[in-house]
Image 1 (cartoon, rainbow, N blue to C red):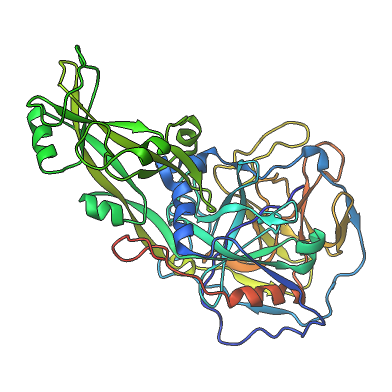
Image 2 (tube, one colour; image 1 turned 30 degrees about the horizontal axis):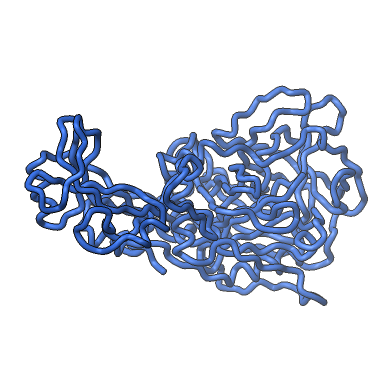
Length: 494
């Protein structure tokens, strides 16, 4: 089972500081995901573009059914000798329920891209925090193969049937247990992720060429077909227009010919560099144009321009044009550029929008626990009862003894009888569940799946035991400050 990374959520912290015993050595590790707003914009747009096509393309975190484990029980009901502690949950003024189902809207999916380019997801929840910006999930839903964090990591609260009703929250920093980060030790298989303010698309707007070139966010050019007369006027006004199609009797002409019209011809950067400036045949046609494209468009483009991919994983094509003056033909069409910018809106801090579940550590085992997640993988026997489209839950008492797992580095996990399959990874384990408020205290996250009776079906799940070291990791994440991605007018913030 490989590790992946997840996003986070949160709400305001209780006035009292967490009482956590001092550790002999640091138990936490901080890793950057997408700390800069300009990069976070690209990550969010990647998932939202084309009506959420990338969200719909994603599959549950990769999991091999043959790795279903068996439980090895241990003694002891209090793995940690520290004092129990808790931070209360926080709700919003509109309550904690989703619009579509009778479930807390704090839960959702985290989406990310692995090194092979595969789109994947896990389960997660918003959790209470000082800056109302934390998400908790499984550590293997943040880190790939116990090393690097996943790319384009985002949290979608209230995810339901392919929709992101409260926006997308891009992960800025991930906080995990030192042993998970260094040794792939699943006793620390949890992560707290600080996320930026939420982000949602808000339509488009036509602007001038100057505004278009100055816009740092998403933008594109839409061609509008015009008449030959409009085309001539556009050229006289130095507008951005062009012609397409084949002349019935193509014939080059000089720029001063009374019937000549101007075409732009895409060329290589070398040819463009050698071209002169002015109105002559073969002279430069404006500045090189760099446009954002989809991965499919980027792959299909064979030149003569250049392709690039930035550190955030965004794909661009730069095109170079020279002039060609020709006599118009009967099959020729004329176009004028319409400059369009994509508008976005800030949906606010995660905890302000959906609230945050509480957090508890050093709690006694054997408590009634509610577990949520988005199961999707088939059972080892091939049966696939879950789709991953909507959230599911399990409810019951955790075991009174800590357990071990054979196939993973697990010595101290708590266990619950539950048939949810992978896809539910990272989903919250909530004690002291309040059914009316849809809130509780996160006391674990789904980590490992088990077929304990050997019938090739998942029948138990387990979570790391949340102890004083978990509280130490949470405390560090609780201090993390994040930013807005877009301004009040939809402009991209730097």
